[in-house]
Image (tube, rainbow, N blue to C red):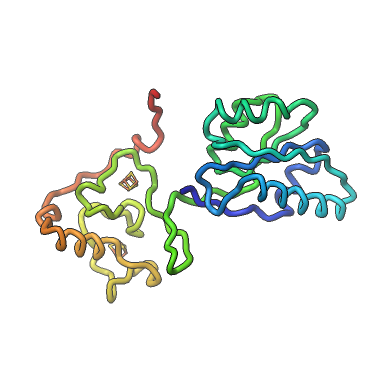
Length: 213
Ligand code: SF4
Ligand code: SF4
């Protein structure tokens, strides 16, 4: 899931204040917490109240797209609604915002969310934790299914830094040392020999890539 957080209402009001007719677009895709129709309606109500405090009356239309990052689905949902709209406010991650901006280049498109990371939900702890940085060259096959690029604070590829205390990262004692987790996992699988293989520096060009689909 892609983890996002609502931008401060005042920041969003600053974006939309020059406009009157605003399309708020939710996304039913992979953002977490959910940012669909219900959240879009709630945001429209909050912005309406915030607008009144600024002596500004907005006209909101509220829709949601199955996946804003899918330009076909998003175009078919938004195009019938776009007439008379001055601007679009998207509740999706940054990818959804950019998809709408490409579909409607004549319209200003604003993000209502800050996009933080790709993560997983730890239900017992009630937290969302980063798991993947989309590095473009996945090494989970040799790291016991635990990502050191993302979960080690230093992004180390060849084992622990040696600074962990009681299994916790020296950079953030609230987090487990990723390399200790990797060691434990590989030990259980009788694959500790993988730790003897040298991992060369990563090719960071692979982070910003284009794939043919
Ligand atoms: S190695 Fe790269 S692609 Fe694989 S989980 Fe880590 S950041 Fe994501
Ligand atoms: S303590 Fe572990 S997770 Fe933290 S920086 Fe060192 S190797 Fe990485």
